Amino acid sequence: MAKKASVEKKSKRTCYSVMIVPQYEGCAHQFKVSRLAIYGVITAFILFVSGFAYAIAQNTRLKNTVAQYDGRGLDQVVRLQATQLDAANEAISTSNTELTALKKYVDYLGTLDAKVRKMLGVGGNSASLASILKSTATPTLSVSRGLGEAATQLSTSTAVVQKAAEAREKNLIVLQDAASKYNSMLSKTPSIWPLYGLITSPFGWRSNPFGGSSSEEHDGVDIAAPYGTAIRATADGTVEQVGWNGTYGISVTLYHRNGIETLYGHMSRMAVSAGQTVKKGQVIGYEGSTGRVTGPHCHYQVMINGTAVNPMTYLD
Ligand SMILES: [Zn+2]
Image (tube, rainbow, N blue to C red):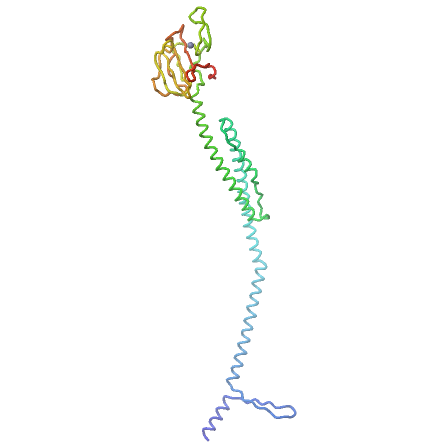
């Protein structure tokens, strides 16, 4: 009996009775609810309310963030991007100006190339370069046309100009070589007077200077100047002969190129030795009256493959 009483006392402390009584008629219903169940329901309710409040707070914060970016924050981003685009546009515009100048310069080189080719008699076609440059339209760049398109055009134009410049460089190297050969040819071509004076006897047929009615073919020109006047090489060459030379007296013969030779006769003395290389304008001897002469002068003679030609053709 004592044990049963203890169980009933404990049940009274941990359970509650809920009675449902109809308002008018019918049987009443009674339920027993444990204290633990009630605590569970209350805890669940508190958790639900707390979670709902947290969700509302988060939503409000998110709305504020979006509003900030939609407003002032977004404006800042747009302004920054606009500034960057302006800077990019300006940089491309500057590059475009430089590219245009470079194209003009390469074009100028093409014109110069053609002129030099014509002067040197060198073949080749520089028109192709000009056509390439003309076909490469200089892009008008702007942000409104699209930065990507502008950059692509600029890159393409730069590549074309670079190729054109490389082609021009190759052509100039060819011309440089041609000019070098041309200069060498010029320097080895008789073109100056061996000395300045009076032409006392021209090239060709003349009456015998020693009198009589006979005539003779004169194979050079006689240039009279004060005795001892310096005689200069009329072109670059090599001393082929030096010393006494029959009727020419003391003479010097120079070999230049391609069978071209010059002879300077009747010298009083020479200033070079056999085999020596001489430059155009270099003193090779001095005027005199050695050999078959009637007075001091220099007999100047030009020969091509051993045949005397009129020296006046080669004199300025
Ligand atoms: Zn002569």
